Image: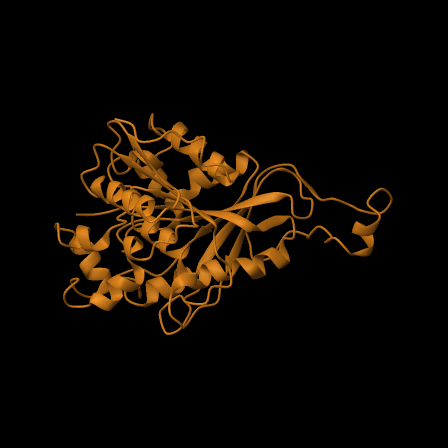
Amino acid sequence: MAYGVVGAVSLALLGLTACGGEDPAPAAPRAGDSAAANPTTSEKVEVLDEVTVQRIQYPTEDADPEQNWADLYLPAGEQRVDSIPLVVLIHGGAWQSQLGAQIFEPLARDLAGRGMAVYNVEYRRVGSGGGWPTTFRDVANALDHVVAVDRRFPQLTTDDELVVGHSAGAQLAVWGGTRHKLEDDEVGSRPAFRPTRVVSLAGPLDMVYAATHGDDRIVKVLGGTPKQVPDRYTSVDPIQNIDPDTPVIAIHGTADRMVSPENSRRYVAAVQKKGGEAKAVLIPNGDHGSVVTSTAPEYPKVLDIITDASAADIDDVDDVQG
């Protein structure tokens, strides 16, 4: 079984790379600065003519500069302080090195085209220095670095933000939204940045169920089966780390043969049983890759759902379909 955008994504998409440089764009003044205090006379608000991309290196243990980075997409238009909502993207690929953050380039640009800032995370995976616990530590540190990114780019809002993940990245995204519940000695505990809403795209949100139903990729990234390393599953399995106060939308294609839609159904039912807010959106005939493929008929609906979730409103999202 494999994750990520596979046959549904063209070779051209897989070949895309993010652009940008190390130096940040000039930051807009924060409230309280002399310029911001009298905006009618002295404030100069930066205006971008087009979507721009900045490469951000985030700190993590034994960092690899070729993999420990995120691309920050800034939308065109005025860059006023605390005016642009941030969406974090975490790509899939079975926690393995074959697919990277470049597969989310089209989605990142489309979201930026809708007025959002996008933080597209790369991280080490199995086959490129990742696995347990490195992959999970990298993603946790990339999320926590949002605090520093906000200082460099004060036009971002980071107090009530959305994380979106696909496939393995969906597991990491949902886990990222509940890290505040971890014990101090667990990987990723004591987060500096906590997303308040999550969108899962074809995610293995019940890792024990998936691992015991033929998903050897989970066994590989965690270094064992649920019986062999139960504490690791307990720590990172989304269904075992539910926060009823963190709304989750679980999108899944009904024709997904790589990650069973049952993962989303089981997770949403468990959240609702705990009194939390979660919705499953099952897309008829959608497969594992089509939910994130810009040329697929399902893609506009996915884009709309992410846009609605970014606005802190999941009530308008359709419930289970098909």
